[in-house]
Amino acid sequence: MKKVLVLYYSQSGQLKRVLDRLTEPIRESGDIEVTYYQIQLEQDFSFPWEKEAFFNAFPESFKQIPQTVLSPPDEILNTRYDLIILGYQVWYLSPSIPINSFLKSAYAQTIFRDTPVVTVSGSRNMWVMAQEKVKGLLKEVKGSLVGNIALVDRHINLVSVITIVDWMFSGKQRKVWGFLPKAGISEEEIQNSDRFGVIIKDYLSKDKYLDMQRDLVSLGAVEVRHFLVSMDKKANRIFKVWSTLIYNSRNRKTLLKIFNYYLFIAIWLVSPIVHIIHLLLYPFNYRRIKKDEKYFQGID
Image 1 (cartoon, one colour):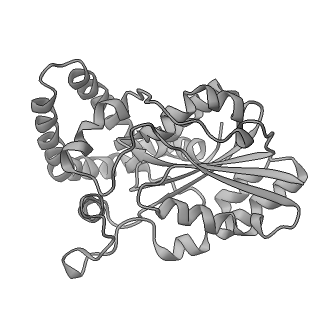
Image 2 (cartoon, rainbow, N blue to C red; image 1 turned 180 degrees about the vertical axis):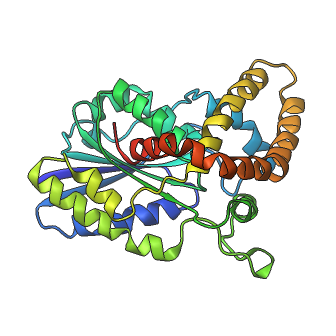
């Protein structure tokens, strides 16, 4: 019997719902045993977020500074899995602190070594650079990335800013102001994610994953929006400066408040202007954009 480990961290529970639906075809198979484990920190993060706690998590999130994780059960540590499905959230353009902390722990070196891995991320819309960081972490623990599924909030960028912020701080996934769409991955997309599980199950049965990512992409597992890729790269460079400045400062609270104002200006004033410029330059950058699209759809 083949063994699959679903390793994840989810605050709101939405990512867990995605994983449940995605793995349904695998769990219904009579010859595959599926084990779930939610990563736990010694000091966890509450949900809904308090505003101060949310911004206070920025430097450590972006700089990928690990915290102490609790040990998985011995049964998991002592089992050799045929496949690991890693479900993660994106915090500040990086894998969340719980995911990052686990992947940097000795437990990950035991569990992931020489094991195929499928990553499943849930984010607002910018995930490509977080996935690059996860790739690096998996290489360090000798995991073998064989597939990637990136599910996002597909609504207009500035609309999703409003709705996601409301969800994070209220804990309620609702129609803001009575008419804006609910934040997060759509219910339809969650329900249809079992189509990915069918593909994963078929390749798992063969123990060969050579063309699996191609098949996942053909069903919409990854959508690469060229403007968001560009913004993700630029924001990473800017966040690197901010996170270093704040992390090393004695005036952390003051700088975090300034960073809060900076984000507001960047999102609501700078981003729309950059978007217009990006569209104007699109014909001149077409080849590079298509090259990036092909790369980020893959797993290399």
